[in-house]
Each structure stands twice: as C-alpha cells, then as structure tokens.
Length: 107
Length: 114
Image (cartoon, rainbow over all chains, first blue to last red; front, side, top):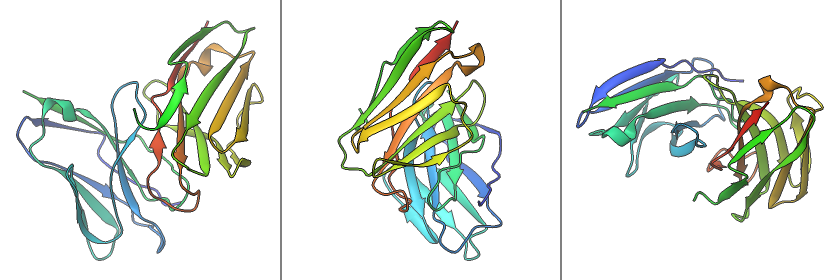
C-alpha cells in the first residue's frame, strides 16, 4: 500500500497559484496518482489523475517527475471557493485517504 | 448532484435504535464503497462491494451491517450504535474495483448518535 505525505495546510490569497506537493516514495509501477477535493460535509470530488509527466484539465494541472516519487497539484488563480481539503492518492485499486492538505484562500 | 445519491442527509438516532443508510447510483458502476469520516480525521474505508459481492471488510464492528441487493444500491444497516459512531458516512462508486479512475462520492449522511 503506497503511502503519501503532503503538507497539513497551506494559505493563499485570491488570484494566486497554489502548488501542493505530495511525496510517494514507494509508488508501485501500476499506481496512478489521483487528487481529490473535499468541501466540509461533502464527499470528495475527483480533480485530476496522472501516471507520468504533466496532465492538465479545466480545473488544475498535475506535474509528475520521471521517478514518480512525488507529484505536484497546481491550482491556477485560486478563489475563495477553492478553500477545501485536497487529497493525494496513489493506490491502484483501493482508495486510502490520508489527512490531506487544507487549503485556505483569503481575500 | 454527483450521480451518487445518499439518503437521508442527516440522521439522529438513539443508541437502541435501528436505522439504515441508503446509497443509490445510476452510473453503471460495478463497485460501491462505504466510508466513515469522523470529525478532523481522515476517511476510513469500511466496506467494498464489487459486482454485489463484499470484497472488503476493514474490521468494522458488527453493529454496522452492509447490504448490496444489486449493483445500483448499497445499504448500511445500523443497530445499537455508540456515540463515537457519530460521523459523516460516505458512499462511493467506481466503474470497476480494479480500475483506478472516476470514483464518485455521494454527499454523505451526517449521523449523530445520542
């Protein structure tokens, strides 16, 4: 079971770019890297997934170096509504959530 | 609306009551999950069903009893709960248990045991 390490919390201001790095030193060959967002009293919501290099969608970008031992979620120009907990997962078939990173966006 | 519907959204029950949580998905997914999220704690995986068969039971006390009558519905039957069981209970589904993509969560049931 691949374990992940990410910062407990991050603060930012509206309009800034937020980068959250997740360490997963023992990631397995078959593991994908997936990020979820969770607002209070709601279920997590899928944001983005990648295997290697860079993935971009309308919400975020995911940067994965060649060794795949870490990944960085990039949220461009955050707004107050991006305040949430962000989870990094690298389990290939069973979701194991850690504590996540609480991102607080201030005006 | 995510495609996974959980009812009720809120539930208050006494320790001697019996209640059930319901989860429904019409996404055509074959795997369904129950998670528990206590205050300020990570999500804990409770049960996994794949093609209506239970494939995972993470040492959950017997006062929690899951049921999956078909691939679209998942229940969590509750009886003689304890106050420490108060939490947000989340249901999720995915196309296939072995395919790590597109897990969809419901909005959860906020359970309070008094």
